[in-house]
Image: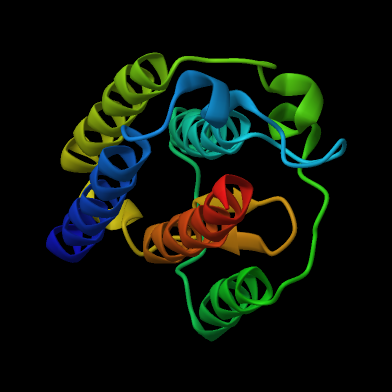
Length: 175
């Protein structure tokens, strides 16, 4: 299971690198410009995604720090993960949790700075997964703000869908 999760992280890394390569062709002004008064700029979307991953990892680290007795992920956790992916696929707007909403995002940022932070965050995530005890890989460790408890595969499924959802938003902002 660990190999499959790390493979999913590698896919996420590849998609992120591809996006950064595409964004390198835009000016800082273009990346920091909001397409509409209540919309996020590209750098704000990237920071939102970064914070989402950062706080997800922090939650899992904290949850596992006291060796909890967690239920094994089953059909209900899989259904919750599918629900999260389904609503991210839809063109619906969902209010972000306060920690990763507009007030938590910088008004302007530098793409190189975001890349550096993302590289650091992904390495922290990779190290965490490599050191994680095997018995926690199939447990309901992660708590999604709307869907509830998910396993690590469910968490990575969410992170992938969340990234792809916001990648579309980035492309719309640049259009």
